[in-house]
Image 1: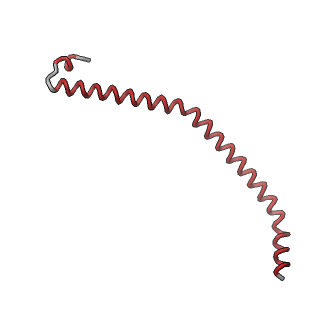
Image 2: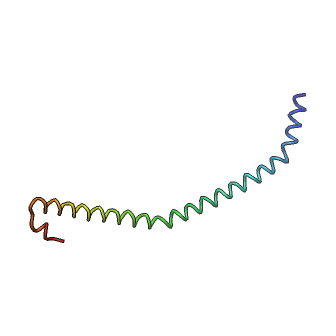
Image 3: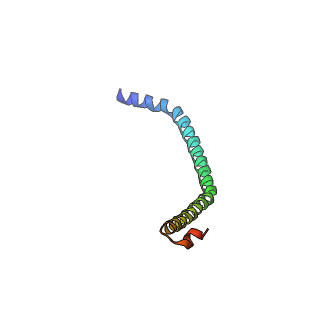
Length: 84
């Protein structure tokens, strides 16, 4: 009885298995395509992000220099007050 049930399950699973394998292969292909698209996007945006980091660092340096100049001016340094 148990062998008959196992054979029946195996016989009915075969057509479904082929469809399942085909679906799985399509899903894997779609995932691969999506991953490749993400990799291309990230590579294209890498230079933009690097430029943004460099611009932010430059801004922070200039802001820090300006704050030092303002502090020196408030402390009485006439040259710091006159400098632009």
